[in-house]
Length: 386
Figure 1 (cartoon, rainbow, N blue to C red):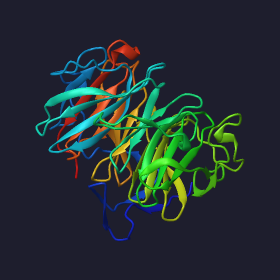
Figure 2: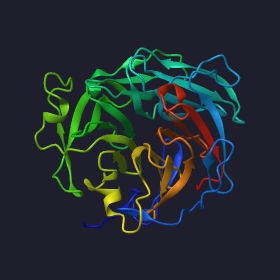
Figure 3: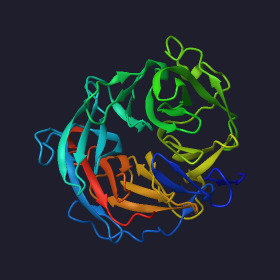
Figure 4: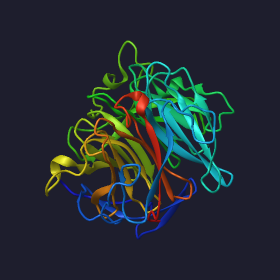
């Protein structure tokens, strides 16, 4: 495979860019990543919550499915999935989807400046199997339905404004979304074995009520150039969106999606890969592929949600397997960051950093009983790289 060097900053030479209030440092990526020593050190013994963490990090349970959230009267939803954090004055909010069908929807937990839970509440109801989604620059949550002919719902993390269904973003088996404020588009993954990678171009940035759905066009290789083509019928019926453009590139089970500094990363669970699109030159390549790992056992046994930190580290959650969140560094090293013991029938979902970057939220979707009613949502706090 051809190996390219991608500069994640818009300008060569280690420049910086500020996107959505977060400082991202320019760093070179030469894909695909290989196993190595974690910048956070080795994992310790399981803590009281069964989580193995590097030295200096601690965990706590935020919520459990079917139980009231600590300090509130709100009962946490089943099968917690994709999530995001939002600044709220001196505190913040964590929003989490519910991947059940029917009902689905999403809930939120509000924190004070000290991290104390102050309230919890519903932000979306009466939808189906809300899996992942994405945060917009105007501080709404895009909650995506992972069902055939599913919709995207734009929701208010504060629970004040009613959620709005965004039909123009297409009807397909939605998974995740990531906003690109430079090109003023939203990237979308599709959880099908022959799914596609899309972008939605709003007529007006900041308003998702109308616009154009496009699909990625490329060859069958794992690297090369790409372009975009309009999807003729975003409604996806009677012809599915993924089959309307014959030259569109097929991906095996699209999952998480993350944007930063002219790059978008997304995962595909069917082949256990992390892809990266270099948006300044319209090329794509592999950031991680377990079939190309050169030494020992592949560190990721099931890619799922993905997010990033201020240092440029990518954090990839596992669907089953070792129940880990792995870190991929700008130096193309991949290593476990945390591991949950005793929950092999679950999956890790919804990784998202607090606005100050010191706390990581995520869930074990079926952590207690192996069923959707056994979800556990956690917080990990510690010296994350900045």
